[in-house]
Amino acid sequence: MKKNIIIIVFLLFTSVFVYSQNTITGTFSGLANQQVKLLGFNGFATYAIDSVQADGKGVFKLRYSKQDFGMAYLLAENEKTFVVLLADKENLKLKGLNLALPESLKIIEGEQNILFGQYATEHPRREQTLSAWDYLANIYQKDSLFALHEVPKQAIEKEKQRIKKEDSLFLATLPKGSYVSYYLPLRKLVSSVATAAQYRTEEIPATINAFREIDYADERLYKSGLLGETIEAQFWLIENSGRSSDSVYIEMAKSIDGLIDNLLADEQKLNEISEHLFKFLEKRSLFQASEYLAIKLLTENTCTVNDDFSAQLESYRAMKNGNIAPDFEFQGDVIAPGFETAHIPKTLSAVKSEYTVVVFGASWCPTCPQELLQISGLYENWKQHNVEVVFVSLDEDETTFKSFAGVFPFISTCDYQKWESPIVKDYHVFATPTTFLLNNKREILLRPNSVSQLDSWIDWYLVQGNK
Image (cartoon, rainbow, N blue to C red; front, side):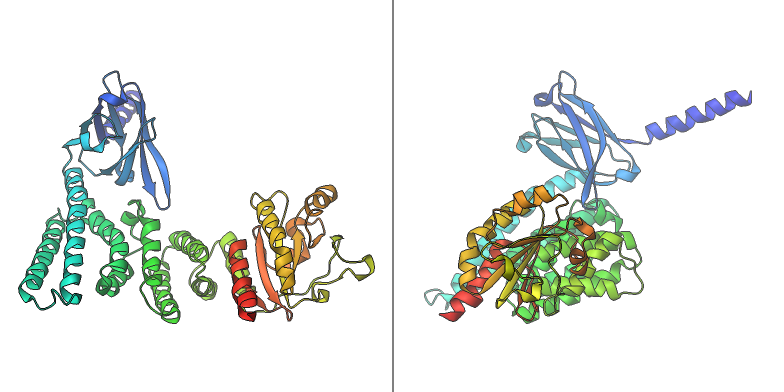
């Protein structure tokens, strides 16, 4: 009897679980017999929610549960996608020809998706019209032929305000507490950045403040698919706000402070978002801001940075611009074209040049061979401006090292200890290639993220500066 009760309870529980799931039903004749996937967003990543094969008429049904609520997208075999909103107690029904033809698609059922689709169609049209009115307003302000005509100027401004009010009213009337009421204003903010920077500079301060007011620990943001764009857009706008470089870095520091304070209670999100921001700042060569972020995280006593990211940040603190790079001996094997055996330098400090480029890399590094060949092609020009190059290899095999480095025209050294090399550890190298530009006092002048950036520095400061 007890066994039967347990089975019945289990079946009831399973039944409730199954029927509590929400569904997406699609009818797309162009997807007949194709596999259709539903993928959701989780922070910076995506994950598979469900997958099913459409029948011969292109009909399919996908399921999702409460943990999937947020934004997601349908993916067909032809790699075309369609963004959908996954909401509680809101089954979604779609009909169309193909995901590649969104104009043929119709949302039959799903209130929040209908609102999302309506705004996604209407908002860009309003923005295009506003841009046209902005263009005319600029003419009536600055062109002497039109500047005296007040009536058109007032009419233009009145129409601009009407369009903005119409857009704001749509967002204000969205169902309270719904995901669409959170997502659409966020999407509008992110998409407004380029327009504000280029055409509506008066909106820049308010836009930056709006980014600063976002709760970056909010799970709804993690499910939006906009997490990376939200972080990057704020700092891109500050960078392109027309401020002086000093003012730009002051504003970035203010945003970094607010971001870290916001995330202190959630270490996992703090690590993920900080690492993403750090890489973004490095990629855009905003080294003063990435340095500020690194030191802020390392000195924040109330948070714990994961080991890998901490090593990366420590490298930045220890080897930042202005610090003195450690001297080191050329241990193991040394290849030094152009040097007589008796005059091969024994240490980095023995390299007689005004500037030295120290490159850490290896034959097994995917991008190192290409970058080292680029340096080889630029070496003779650099040499004329008193720039020497020292390549520190992380290879572990003598034959491999000599074969790889033997074609380079500059000094190469390898102690075959890979990441355990004292030189690698002293320079806090955690990835290859890593490059430093030093002066004759071993002061770090630059940590370039590409050979082209390094060559531009040499051209600007050494070549053009000496003309």
